[in-house]
Length: 180
Image (cartoon, rainbow, N blue to C red):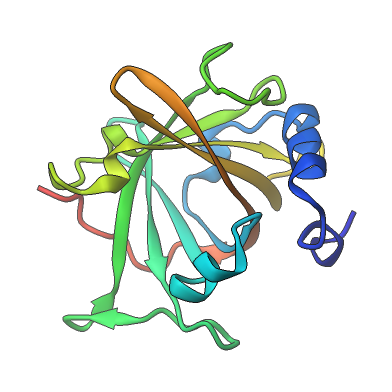
């Protein structure tokens, strides 16, 4: 299935792909940058926010794989927006194994979790409650990934309609500082 076909799928079909996805290893994401496309959100939400973004991944000296989102121009070629002369980053996360039953939607065996609660985001930053399980759509490859967003709040996991597609662009060129 091609990215163009995937972006036109209804949420029920995206959920099926998430449940049947292939394993992803955190180590295979380290050093890579992906163009992201939001899927499944109501059009009014897309117009108020964005459809295209970037996710970058980096391995720390201790072996932890972490990442962040980058705001991009919505018009191709989707150049990174700058803030203080550097790419505008937000929503930092750690890549951790997805534990069985952790996600409120079924996720393919061997998926990983982008855990924003471990990303050292500012205390009042709502992204700290976000969790993104991701799987590969191509067995044995991390070039095309599917993710889904849920929110962890008050000891509960809350479903959202937000899926996203990640297409590998190349290496991470800018390593963002971890929030303090």
